Length: 477
Ligand code: ADP
Ligand code: GLC
Image (cartoon, rainbow, N blue to C red; front, side, top):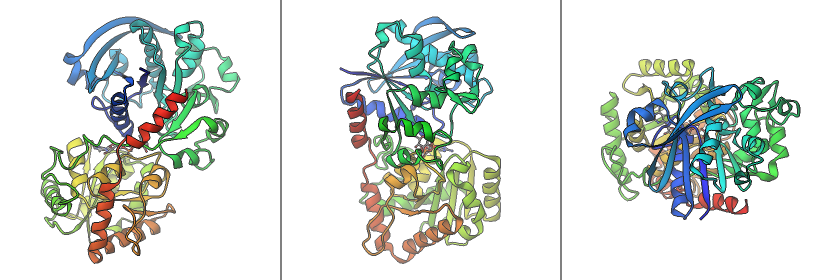
């Protein structure tokens, strides 16, 4: 049986800040069902310790030496759905409010990565594939190949590196090489880890891994261009023959309107019209909106950042709210975006509401209650929101970029084909125009809308197909 170790900075069911956690929580489960020995390693954050510490089994403690770092790591494990989860504990580094975004992130995640490799030795587990995700684990392939080159156990380990978001790169001052990673300055000088005078964990992952993947075929193409390449397009073009774009799936057992315990009313594709009305009414009641089950409700569950197209919405808020709609927004993010939605709630009382925060339960209810799910992203490596929305019979309205382009197909009013709405250019005019079209379809062409909802709910958003591709990739290695 082939073994795979997923190394990441977040993963469900333990900890989530975004789509990365959805992927780490669902892909290993599917691979496990396909007879792989799959294990996941995560930092033991405060939130995880608070909730799960009593359920974790202690494995041991090691002194981790990495550059000037000389600190203990304790290891714990548990099992969920046959997948083994390891946790790396260092209270000062990880038991904080929040996951990352601290000034010492470079040091914290250098320690974490060295601790992962030392853990493999301690538990005598050398995976066939070490599958690292995003910048937090971008140094793993290089550290293995440089620090452990004389240890034959690590020889057979192949490295897959998945880019979930190229914009977050983990770039740190170059002295981190010596101080936190125990690496020679030559890796700065030869350019393999250098990025604009800094050291880049993301770039290092791209350069040193055996295969690089990203989370949709379109994004895999986009990042080869200067427009989307975040200044790494050149190095990505250099590695393009080892770069695969594999679209994400979601956990369709977890996200299932038929069994979801958080919904006011469960429903299937057969009774979605009634199910949606009941759930819409519940959201309206809970959030103080006008109780109108027939109004078109637009939902948005998102980090509120430039990437997500929030300023496009801000720019055309009056036009959007001029339509016959209700608008529900859940999320946190940039201050300007949050104040736009606060203003919206104030100005359009009982028609628009902004819930500022992270709320898993409310997210489920919005996916079920809304008719249209808005994701006008500037760029989107894959996007999980639109997949969940389709599963819940909410039609995604997206910009045609990255994974949104690969998963959402625009409504064709002449053939009734499609599973959502989309627009191409990143402009407020196109957003408003498409929203108007969606609104007209909802009110004036209910048969077309019904068909679209069926198409959306029948879209395969599971991991079945994409897990085959990961399997193929692992087998090649
Ligand atoms: P990204 O990872 O770029 O933020 P994705 O669409 O891939 O975007 O994934 C976002 C995930 O996080 C989805 O599962 C979405 O439902 C969830 N999410 C985002 N914001 C919130 C929030 N405020 N409360 C609850 N869930 C949220
Ligand atoms: C990142 C991307 C998002 C993707 C997620 C999971 O957060 O922004 O598009 O769905 O990772 O791969």
